[in-house]
Length: 343
Ligand SMILES: C[S@@+](CC[C@H](N)C(=O)[O-])C[C@H]1O[C@@H](n2cnc3c(N)ncnc32)[C@H](O)[C@@H]1O
Image (cartoon, rainbow, N blue to C red; front, side, top):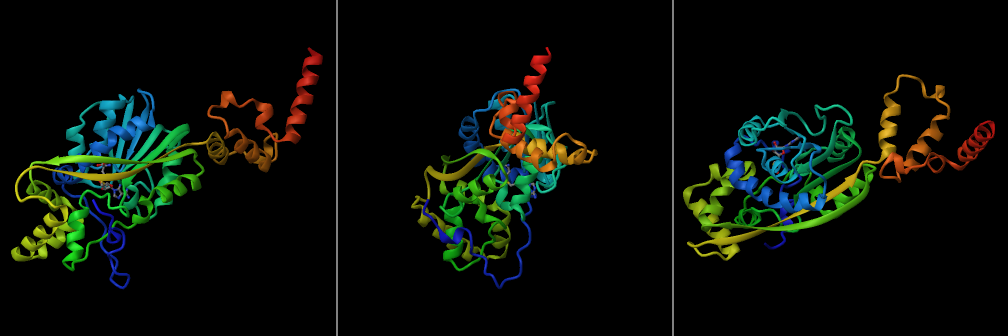
C-alpha cells in the first residue's frame, strides 16, 4: 500500500464541517474493518503481555471485534465495551454473548464508568474519531486503576496503512472528496506517544503492526468499501458508469487481476503506557472531602511525594523514606529513630 498525503487532509478548509461518522450497520462494519481489526488484535495483545483474569475496558468497542479477541486470548475476568452506536452494540452483543462481558452505550470523552474501575483499557481504532482525543485519553486514565495499562491502536493513516486506502486514493484521483476522521493527526506513532506522555503515563512505548488479509477476488475487497460511512454516501451519488470507472481505478492501483485471489496489507500504530501511582494518589486526594490542610503535610508536599512514588510500579516497592522529599525524609528518619529508642 503506498503512502498517501490525501489520507489525512482531503477535506478542504473552506468546506462546511463534515457530518460525524455514524456506524449504523454492524454486519457491514465487520466485513469492512472488523476482520482487519481482529488481525491486529492478536499481535497487539501479545505486545501488551498482560496476564489472564483482568478487568478490561474496550473503549469504542464497535461490533465487538477486539472484544472477541480479548476474550479468546486473554481470558478476562470481565470486559465492559462502550460505544455510542446502537447498531454496533447490537452486533457485539450477539457476537460475544458471555456473562463476563457487557456492552454499554457511551462516549469515550465522558465514560459511563467509575474512577479506577478496570485493570486495563484499550481503544482499538477509535482515537481518531474523537473530537477531543486528549479528553478521551484522560478518561482512560481516570477509569483505570493505578499500575494498570492504557493502550490503543489506530490505522497508520498518514503512512497509507488504512485498509481501504487504495479505494480512497482512487476516489481522490477521480476528483471526489472523502471525509477524513476528525482527529486523523493522532494516528502517527509520534502523536500517540505525545498524547500518552502528556496524560502522565509511564513506560510509554509504541510499535507498528503490519497485517495481511486474503480476499477471494478484487470484487470481494471492493464490496467491503460499501460498509464505510465515508464512502457509502459518495457511492450513492455516483452513476453506474462513474462507479465502474472508480472501481477500475482502484483495481489498477492495487495491480490486481479482475478475477483470482489477492492479499492486501494494512498497518496499525500501537501505543501503551502505565497509570502512575502518583496520578492515582492525586485522584484520591482530589476526591477527599477533608480539606488538604488538615492532612499531616502541606498540599504541595503531598503532590511531590505522590509524584516521587510514581517511579515505582507498586506501592510496596516504594519505601516511604524514599517516596518523600528530603526535608520530610529527615523528619521521618528522626521519628523512626525516636520510636526505636523508646522501644
Ligand atoms: C473503526 S470502529 C472500531 C471498532 C472496534 N473497536 C474494532 O476494533 O473494530 C470505530 C468505533 O468508534 C466508535 N466511536 C466513534 N465515536 C466515539 C466516541 N466518541 N466514543 C466512543 N466510541 C466512538 C464508533 O461508533 C465505532 O464503533
